[in-house]
Image (tube, rainbow, N blue to C red; front, side, top):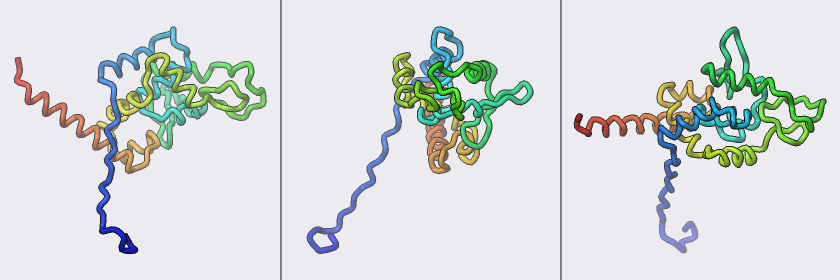
Length: 197
């Protein structure tokens, strides 16, 4: 175009598709399963609950250390970025049990890292790919669960609070806040448009 071989072109921005979400009933059913189903392995229950409640990337969940879970008095907190998040009792108990688990027997005794989700190799955390496969094997889908959790979580706090809590870039936090507001407005309009029985 600069050399005169083509006319001026306007290239439209390719819009991102809205991420696929879970319906509300499925989301809460999966979260309930993670919090209460003792047949599921403890590490999968913990990882699934963090995914379904806080919408974290699996790479961040897999790399959490035991220091991310802290107890102060009767309250337990999970720190995902800068702001400790108070945990409900059931999740607090689940993650506390996870921090108290002994490391795998094939772990190096002198490892300096205390991973919340230790891997099979000495000193390394569980791979996000392996974690995703294990969650999928128990019907916990990664991307839809994350999208649903972020929309639910972003409905109340403003982006300036949401970002430091979940480790989101300010622009990303604002995007999820707008998306949550849009979903709520659409739901409300649909509810008002339906005549009462």
